[in-house]
Image 1 (cartoon, rainbow, N blue to C red):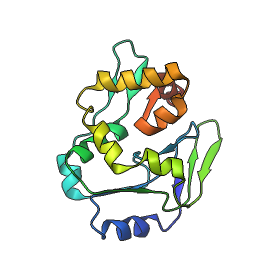
Image 2: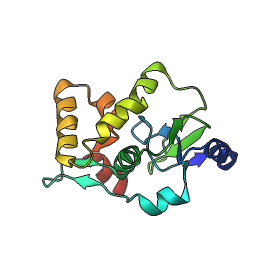
Image 3: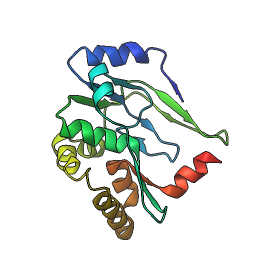
Image 4: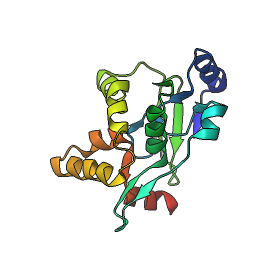
Length: 166
């Protein structure tokens, strides 16, 4: 993954405005925008020392709720100040040589809804119950709207992880 050369200064400028965590949104390898990944992210020392990193894989190994999502939910439950935006351009490379580029821009209306803090704070209430989170994902797949729900929740099918590991 590569970023605009000024990313560190851009993240620090936002952090200096009182944010505990500053996320520079970027494209996942599957082409979806993530609001809570760890590429291009500023995390304050106090948050880094006090918020654990965790993930969840279902027993049948079909579903995973990733560490970026749980980290964000734990931040929201602790009332951390979070900023998410497309602050600078980034390119995310895949092992097969393909790449996805996300240019600096304001969030779209749909992205603003997906990243709406009160809504994400509400979802954080369920983060201690990963099985509930998996059910949200299953409902999304059943309804055929899994791209939106996956991006919203920060989840992905396990086969995507396996693809990355090859």
